[in-house]
Image 1 (cartoon, rainbow, N blue to C red):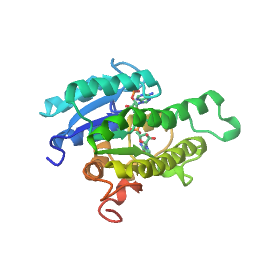
Image 2: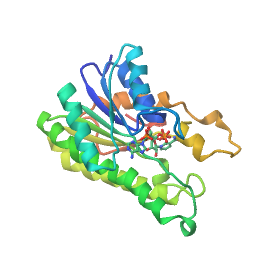
Image 3: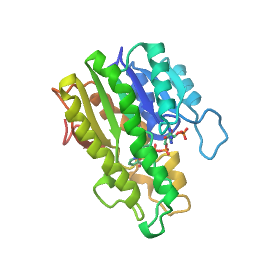
Image 4: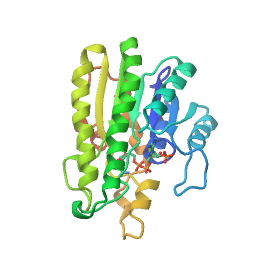
Length: 251
Ligand SMILES: NC(=O)c1ccc[n+]([C@@H]2O[C@H](COP(=O)([O-])OP(=O)(O)OC[C@H]3O[C@@H](n4cnc5c(N)ncnc54)[C@H](OP(=O)(O)O)[C@@H]3O)[C@@H](O)[C@H]2O)c1
């Protein structure tokens, strides 16, 4: 129970990596705020915030499902208020909500898709940090974990330029924010989860011949994030790490 007594907000937790992290955090004793937009099953992708919260509760954990579009400032502020009313503190924010929507060459990349990727991957992270920071500053402690991607620095799959650009912004934001709040007791780190087979990935790569043998399951991203959730600026901050290197290259 390494996270006993801690309260963690996980964005993008209706499915995929976020659901995996939320599940692992709850098993370690954290009270988890399950954040995403989907409330009803039957959409394009499986998973709702209530399903994740119910799975956690069925295992004996504590979870609160809160509907929130992270690109919308009013939604984000209301989500943080709801979390504070329920739990009274926020120890960890995992900015996991993110995605690519479309893979494609720059020349053919639709402008509206560009705006959507930037809104979700960049604006979303900015807004949630802005809303949670005052709480963490008052506490004098907190950990912010931004889920980024290896695509921020390197070519990953064809058509990933815009997605990689948005994640490069997340990396830079992480390092800058870590520096801003280091003396306030708040750690800020970026995590590249590696290749994880999720519902979103299945949709994006639909129809493609894939060797899934090297892909991780969502819950496998959990353990390094448990370790990160227990850090302070004195022990670990301002780093962009690969979750798959945990225990080997870092800590
Ligand atoms: N899977 C990989 O191999 C991989 C590799 C590198 C990095 N990543 C990163 O890891 C993160 C999770 O990826 P994933 O593969 O698990 O994605 P996914 O299966 O598509 O899940 C994305 C999650 O984000 C939520 N979301 C999307 N838009 C949102 C919004 N506007 N407001 C709130 N929540 C929103 C979705 O829920 P709703 O639709 O219910 O809102 C869902 O819970 C992303 O940041 C991705 O870039 C993934």
